[in-house]
Image (cartoon, rainbow, N blue to C red; front, top):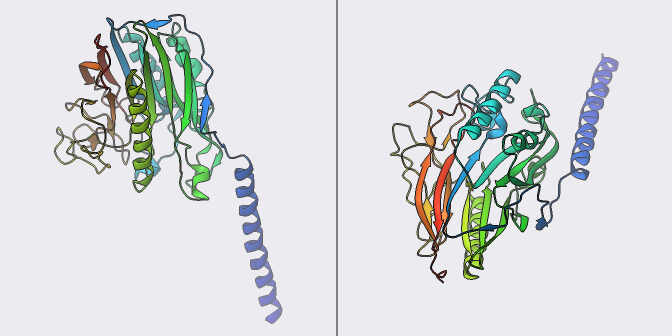
Length: 360
């Protein structure tokens, strides 16, 4: 009896030891392969021919988190209360074709700001989505910044997400003279942070015919944190925008802020039940004269706890633009696609650079 007990104990100890050693080995592998971006990194600029932006021109921008074409209307997601991890291959292809069709059908656009664009990930079937977008937008220059690069995401344990190589990008009809990836400071604590995105924003700089610069910023702020990361990221963006404007430049920042804009009421919004998202404090965000542009008639993002059902699935606004005082807001609207291809809707901005001298 004792001999049997000792055999069982030895087997149990062996299993525990093997499991611990396996876990240590796995964490060591992830640690040594961890993507460690520098604070400021110049990005290569692909293509492009137009040299300047003219203040007399009307500018059109579209910001869209395309959800790596994996978060369409039939999808729910485990990290948002759902059960699924990766969408079906047929649904993925349908989502991507729908995204491409929308871009083809859209009128002349000066700048596209995309978030969650995969270039090699299990969740998007190792498809290089930048190559796909370049075929749809052949006359544009583009830049790409990594914000999520992990060798293997082990969650959920029963069906791991696997490897991820993803980021955000800007396609622009005018060729930027400089593009930079700027890291947000901070991340989730170890080891959780090893498997989470390394958040950043892109700053593109364009010459204008009046001797100033147009600054286009594409951001994708943190989600699923307790608010501390997003608060710090917001302050970093605010500092950068005010700094560029103080130089006499024009500034437009857009993207997926993962926060409601100032003054947004999450409890009273269209016919969609509101869900709780951190709201930007209106009095502390931007100085007087800046414009926060968003469309109150349509949600930009939906909750992923279940497949989309119109007027049932909770929706909110977390995608919007911020304009410096020397830029005139002409129009802002969200294109309602019933979340067919992504868990976000595209947001379209029309604006113009004011011909008067930049205010300070």
